[in-house]
Image (cartoon, rainbow, N blue to C red; front, side, top):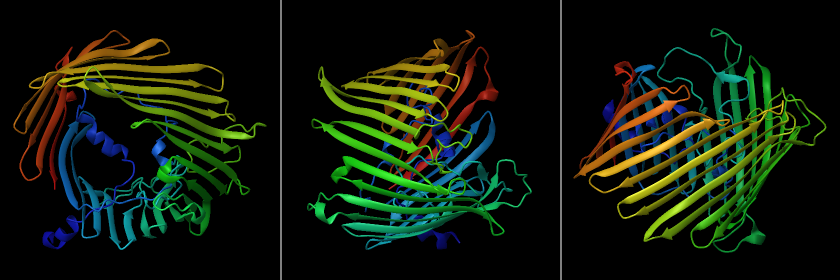
Length: 492
């Protein structure tokens, strides 16, 4: 059987979209820096990369990557994850095996502009909805149908089929996905509903603006969502989206109309993104997105049927302004990245605002990095809450490389946690080791310490072994709170 599956395992898949929370959890023990991550950003902070309408240019390079990891956390027993991702001879495959469940599976075939897709419907070339609109993993009020452990469990990624064709100046696709779901108050033994989605899209160069290799592109997409059981529809959602993008996506304009069972007359949403180069490498990105008060798409995370509708003609909206500025100073080089964002909801009388930024400078064997974030929200009652985080990191030397960092996290002027970290990394012919200590005090003035260790051994022919872990060592040596992970990677 393994011999029969071998040709499939050396195929690959086009790049998939955002990772799910379980994948991010598995990467949580890598300790890439000596300070913990900043306070999580608000859900209204968006990925500006979603405002893309230009052609996807899939990589033609063939590759094969695989990893097998075993990990343990205090809240869960030992678990194993096997992942594979490869591309060869026009075939693309990706799978993820967690324990004895195949949680991710996708197969695609590309040839002369044609593309066929089966399995996970998260291919950016065949989106189920407009990429410039934020999208829930499932419609509002619904969850994946619970089931006993099985080899093919349900997940937040719908399963389906897709087909598309692409030429130099246009492309089109159709996709269909389905998934068993249940309402929020449903009992586990209740018969599940069936979530069905159909999407069709086309994008073409505008003949009047066809300038050799720098054409403007316009796009049109239609999608329909139905949640049905025994011929009865509980949810219907139709959406039509249009867009236009300039060469190199420096300007993108998008609009959408959505009609639901709750609002047959429909509502509108619009967005614009502008990328302005500032010199040779620096750039500015401005993004605005606005909905009218009748926008009721069940996929939109900003929509809530409980919002009180007033006389305002505006619905929820967001805006962001980001800068990327590389620089050279004192024989070193660095970059500054900043983003300011705001979100508003007139119907619920709420507002949110945030800023985040990083600054990094490197010179020979010295590195310095500063990070900070600020979030502020205003509730219905007019009360305001704020959350701030700041961290500083530095690294000096080559073998060993000494690393140190400090951080502080506070809310409404009162600190929640603060601490500092120390680490040293040594390297010998493909082998790297980094022991470290982190000391932290909480708002209750409790002091704690965490010891960590990271190991990496790179072998020949693309094999790499990596292990990392941590254990609380003060005020008590807590063996039961140990976290560790070991991973074997292969890449060619």
